[in-house]
Amino acid sequence: MAEPSLVSGGEEPEERAIEAALRPKHLDDFVGQQRVRRQLSLVLEASRLRGRSADHVLLSGPPGLGKTTLAMIIAAEMNAPLRISSGPAIQHAGDLAAILSSLSEGEVLFLDEIHRMSRPAEEMLYMAMEDFRVDIVVGKGAGATAIPLDLPPFTLVGATTRAGLLPGPLRDRFGFTGHLEFYSVEELELVLRRSAGLLDLRVTSAGFTEVAGRSRGTPRIANRLLRRVRDWALVHRIEQIDARAAAAALDMYEVDAKGLDRLDRGVLSALVTKFGGGPVGLSTLAIAVGEEPETVETVAEPYLVREGLMGRTPRGRIATPAAYEHLGLPLPPDAPFAYSATLFGPGSAPAADDDANDAEFLTDWN
Ligand SMILES: Nc1ncnc2c1ncn2[C@@H]1O[C@H](COP(=O)(O)OP(=O)(O)OP(=O)(O)O)[C@@H](O)[C@H]1O
Ligand SMILES: [Mg+2]
Image 1 (cartoon, rainbow, N blue to C red):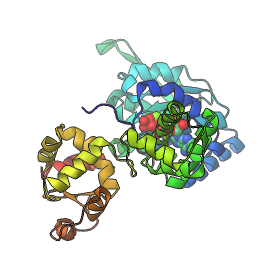
Image 2 (cartoon, rainbow, N blue to C red):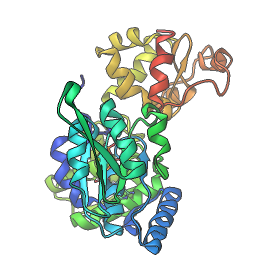
Image 3 (cartoon, rainbow, N blue to C red):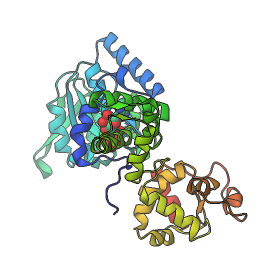
């Protein structure tokens, strides 16, 4: 695997404490995601008016976009206690039973990575969500008996980066599903403004724009880059961070103007310079950059495809005209992208972040 990257959406272990400090606590401080925010605020308001716990909420979307943050906000807005667990932590139905049976009335139960829960636990959750009841199995074999246990009304908030992997019956039991989208540069500027305030940093508007533009539509990355820029400014004794300082700092960390890091750029330039823009198979491309195919596929590729720098065709990866432009190279007349659209009809290519489909799709032609 590659070393942890500054621009990966995932959370680094030492990042937790600082993230907690930067997390907005109320829906009004939560930047962007207009649609989800408006819908969610309606769900919460209605449940307050009814004096009942809110419907179960499912939050889906790529890492670092604010699922955990929203779960915490839901509890805060409902003035309810929050219990946190995750799919991988619930390996046996008994683990879940223990959590459920100790919930208090109105409590919000946040289950992160809910798609990774074990099957038996999942089935127990169905009943708990729908009827606020679980069957606790006591004893083993022929003598085992199921003791029904009533649960207090609670609100389940599930989070998943892979909504496609969630079984239908589980998905159907959520009263509200919010899908988080990548943030615009303007929205990320607002996230950064807020964080800079909390970190007591002086940054110009253009400075915010510079950092936001390199943050891959992801607040977690934006906050991380801001902290690196802060370090750089501190060492260089710069009091006010403008666009030039931000750019110089992030160039030093090898995060370029589009937010590509060294691996992303390596993949892209190998594709363009060694393979004439493709098409080239994943494993060949991976060897060319000295990485595992899996790293290239899961770490570099999704963003390159999302940014329209790389295309995937049945015959392999290809560079788009935008890739040449980004690398500052002239577009050769025989660049492959010109005919790629006909190789793979419009609408049939899977979305870049739809990894569930991707895995299948990719094996077809690698
Ligand atoms: N809308 C937002 N406004 C302001 N800050 C945000 C927003 N969304 C996320 N953040 C910031 O980004 C960081 C990461 O968000 P969060 O932990 O909620 O992501 P996540 O979707 O749960 O990611 P993962 O899938 O890795 O669990 C938080 O520390 C928070 O400060
Ligand atoms: Mg999270």
